[in-house]
Image (cartoon, rainbow, N blue to C red):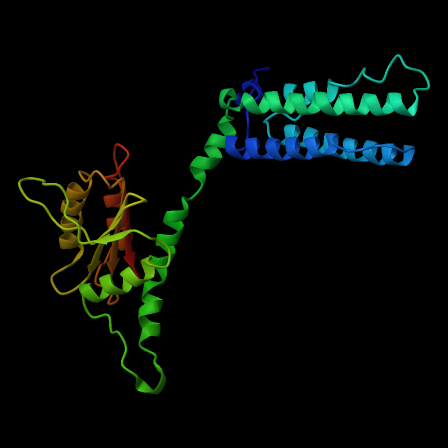
Length: 288
């Protein structure tokens, strides 16, 4: 019977290398603290024995759950380190027991230390890589939430106590100003109206550049004369400009359409998203 790809895959991590290194570092620290214990009575030795086995079991469980194979070689080697250490001594004295457990703990800590040093060489499981690819980046989650709820925010702004004046989002500049305030909640370096590199002999100004995240946000509001065809043409031109900008690896186009002028918003979103290429990603949100 042919083996599945998962069965054929050699032992590999299923967690982030940095996370694995942190877990091992915590166990090394706890083990080192335990190794400094001062034992003078049999009761203290029994307490040390209990703490050691709890520490050892937890370390073994880390090695079990961190790799794609439960009974992997790292867990097997760790569990077998001290298998024979207590054999050959009948009726050991308290001092002999203490020496054995301290030696076992030292061997365990040394093994974890050596494994931690080898982390850069460890393989990452294909399963873990696939799961990371499926994850939604946090910046996309934030921006998607802002775009999806923008219309609700615009409506809420119309409701003020005692008929106080408010911000009515009537044109594209109002959309930009409102969006700028919302972006301030989540991003530190927001650069407005920065110029793009020249394309076809001209350049344009982007609405927002999130410098640290290498994200550009283009804002539009529908109006008379800006229908499906015109919007698609404008955004296609914008994409051509932005993909040449050295600080732009991802473009978000937010189109505020409160009157539902765009007849096929999902079609336009999908068509423009296909212009993503060579590490440059296009995301289009036509809302509501």
